[in-house]
Image (cartoon, rainbow, N blue to C red; front, side, top):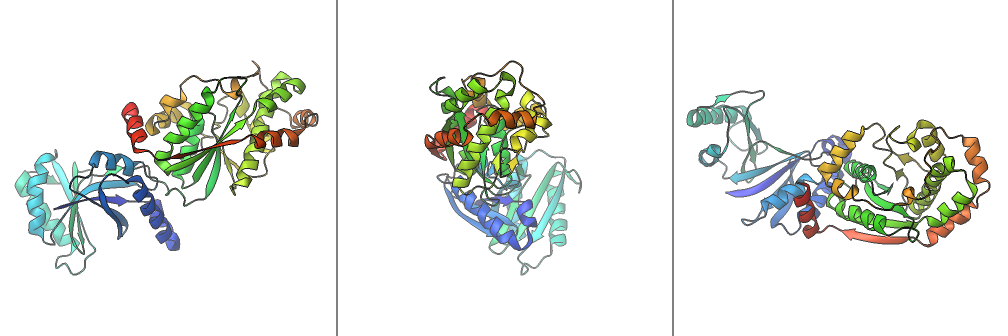
Amino acid sequence: MKRLVIVKFHEPALKGKNRPMFIRRLASNLRRAIKGTRVQSVWQAHMMICLSLHEDADWDSIRRRVGDCMGVAKFYLAMRVASNLEAVKALLRDELPKQRFGTFRITAHRTNKRFPMKSDAINREMGAFVEKITGATVRLNDADLEIFIDVVNDGILVYFDPIQGYGGMPVDSSGETMALMSGGIDSPVAAWQMMRRGSRVKMVHFHSHPLVDSSSIEKAAELAELLTRYQYDAELFLVPFAGVQQRIIVDVPPSYRVLLYRRFMVRIAEALARQQGIAALVTGESLAQVASQTLENIAIVDAAAQIPILRPLIGSNKNDIVDTARQIGTFPISIIPDQDCCSLFVPRHPATKGSPKVVERLEANLPVDELVEQALERVEIREFAFSDVRYARDKSTTA
């Protein structure tokens, strides 16, 4: 008997002529994800990807990593036996006592057309066998246990109920985006959502060091490193923003400072994106969550950019965002106190419905291009790669 992992996918299977490219990308990402776990090989079969495991493969680690691979809808730990139903019956005699069920269904699929029995005949024979040895009854809908029997060219695969993945698209199948990473709860979730849609995400963090300590920098770096478990490497652009803020404080009334901060961040992030050949920005804004996230203010911020600003969380409730942050592991880091640039010189009552004309007049008194260039000249880039040690530590603290 040989152990395998059977990986199923939804959306990549719907892409018509592009399907082979999406599946190859998913297989490539899986190879990166399971490196070092004693997986023997990764290969493509009919509408699924298979991972052959060594006898001493680390199943717990494989299960976590495959589950975090974007594009995986569900997966199974399968057993491969010889190409006859007697071998399947022998396996089920050993495995079914480990399962708890009162009802079951058999789902057979025959891709090896040389096998003498059709799928319906396999379903009937194996259903009668399971009824006989367990006393359970067949139920085609909502059964307690589903037993899958896939007849393939080099044997028969047997597996049970699935483990759910995140679905979506494989990372690197939908281009690159640049995410503004504040270090709070929302922006890492927004970056993760873009990864789930197949985008490779580079991240930019604005800080006010040395006017404040470096805690926000290290926090953003920790988040970027954690997110490598979903896209396997990451780049974080650290932008010194104190100079921009100091100039805005001098010339801009308190109620409009946050709006101008945001517009300058967008300009700087767009310049970095263009340098990297990236065509869209990503933010973690959710409509009306805070004063700067009204429709009027969002429109004013958008007007500062020439490329699209994507907001994957725009219609999400805060509770849903927090739940996702907990699920993906970013929440414990996001709630660590830090001194970020947005906490510096922020008024008590920022404008909730900014005026485009007022913003235009205020920015006319500022050396916009010069301030942007000064910030760009001092950008620091940090690179991160997927780390098994770090992955295990994060999972243990968020389990």
